[in-house]
Image (cartoon, rainbow, N blue to C red):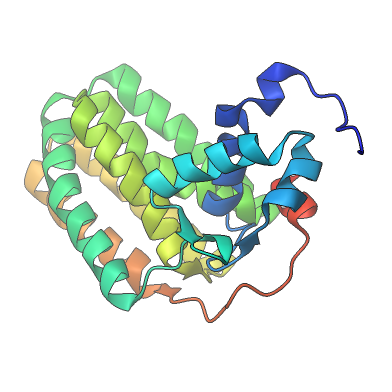
Length: 231
């Protein structure tokens, strides 16, 4: 029996494995429908299939992975209806969040958002698509965290992840730049304490994000799991 390569426990724990796969999904290195073979993942992480299965079950609970009887695990691939529902739900939550943020944002919070915005623009300029995708989504979660409603933050974090995999991002650097510019406009509206304007801008921004996405036509084609997960 082949011995598994040694790995330190912090990097081979169930949560660490789930986190690495989750990151690959959010950054679109693992596309919707991609096959997640337990044997292959076990070899990549140097762990047993049991530990891989535990990680996949956790991701299935987050609706990032689909577990199919007799077929195995795949990156979840929601249909067009679910994609629309995800963005509809985001709009409901983010209207409340941006309105509250506009009413109570501190200078320190606005400064932190501007620093995040700068990181977005650097990633776009560098052509780092994976980092760009992550940062554009994290901007919204950061606002939720700053508002301080943990329930909404948890809900929005899941929605951002699921809307990311529900649709395969095909943004060009130009459209990504426009999205980042819209983040800047949101910050400016908050700085003016313009809650009504901020809500309107958030609605328009989410509509643009949804428009710039299209459902993936992928059906789990073969891909290099090790490269996608960056192990």
